Length: 121
Image (cartoon, rainbow, N blue to C red; front, side, top):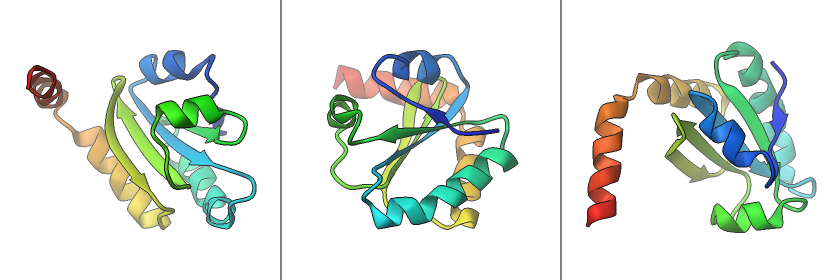
């Protein structure tokens, strides 16, 4: 499955409308971003049940700012519309596969409970 391009216009729809979404915040001038791109693309082929999406931080500066992106590449994982992982830096294929395995295995009832507790605090 090819990666999708996320924009300010479709971000909420894609994040909220899919079970698992993996997002790569990148820029064309970023060497590590370009080096990571084939790994991300290969992951999209290996995990067709996961939406793989990319945000060009140059074209979508508002979206990058809203996501508090300070370093690229930054990888974010969303499960059922909830941000469950956010970390700057490219990762090897095995680590990316492991991340997806962990995200898919999350107990979302517990995640929602923790999110609600954090909002109340």
